Image (cartoon, rainbow, N blue to C red; front, side, top):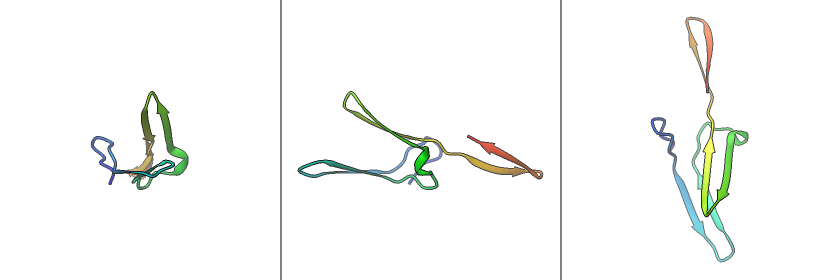
Length: 63
């Protein structure tokens, strides 16, 4: 589950004889907003989340 306070999310890692399988729980995040990078033996998963709220009839986008 994604923690909105610190941006952390649940990740499961499974190893097979041929590969690793990473499953990340990123609710409400669109696939095109997820970035995966592997550099210097570090796997980095980042995502941007946009929210829209209404304030006195105006739509406000939060990024």
